[in-house]
Amino acid sequence: MFDPWPMRVAALLLIVVSTCGCGGDARRASIVGTVTLDGEPLPEGAIAFIPTAGNKGPSTGAVVSDGRFEVPQQRGPFVGQNRVEIRASRETGRMIPDPRHPSGPNVPLVPEFAEYVPEHYNDASTLVREVKQGRNTLDFDLKAE
Image 1 (cartoon, rainbow, N blue to C red):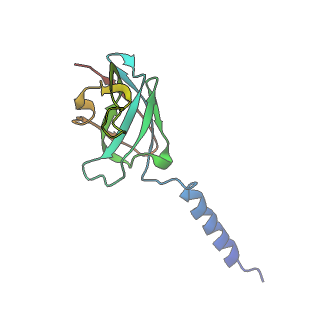
Image 2 (cartoon, rainbow, N blue to C red):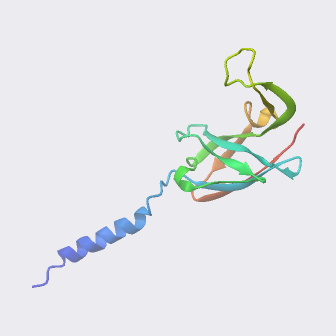
Image 3 (cartoon, rainbow, N blue to C red):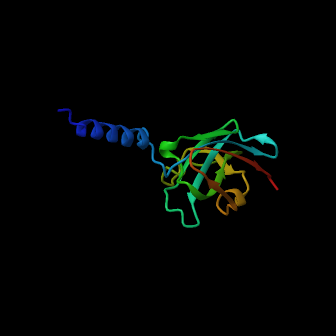
């Protein structure tokens, strides 16, 4: 006599495996986007997503290069509200004592770098975005004022 039990178990396992995905964390989302400052692509910098408003996920981020960034799902932010910080620095043209060396008469000089993205986009960021499940596209048009 034919026993349908093994077939039912196999079918159930197939359904469970197919709905679980390929190891992705459903709480995380991927993000791609652009960052411009006064209409020009940010040459290089960093973007961070920090959970807020009850979102208990980890902070994450990406490098901004030629105004573009991408955060893959496996290390993306958790779905929900996230505060966004954008940073970029450039050489000031000044040389300063290398902070990695102890003070003394022979401290080498290194180029000084300074943040040029306004503080209200990084340390005092007012940028908040809702990250949704799946792939998100977030563009940021920053003003230097």
